[in-house]
Image (cartoon, rainbow, N blue to C red):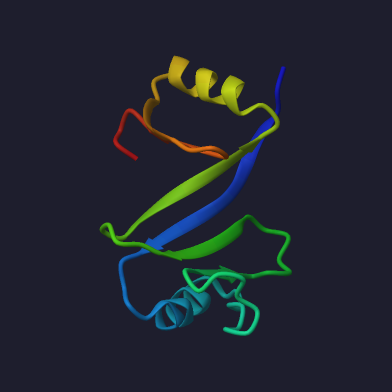
Length: 106
């Protein structure tokens, strides 16, 4: 059987100033936001980089702000099949990830 785990909590921010959003979420979670110099991609800011807790990322997006989770797995096709079997709907398939929607619309 393949293995899966919660990979990250992603906060999608439809906001022009991601650094400003990072200040808010950093204070809200009590986790330091990576500096602008540490950012690998300007559309993402990681919180609590050295924290053993779940990874939290802010992602600048064009769609309305929302939260989504990333599930990491050692067998993407098997995990997609498992989640669809329990009610997930396929939204989009990308080369390295798949976007699914829960029955509740999340």
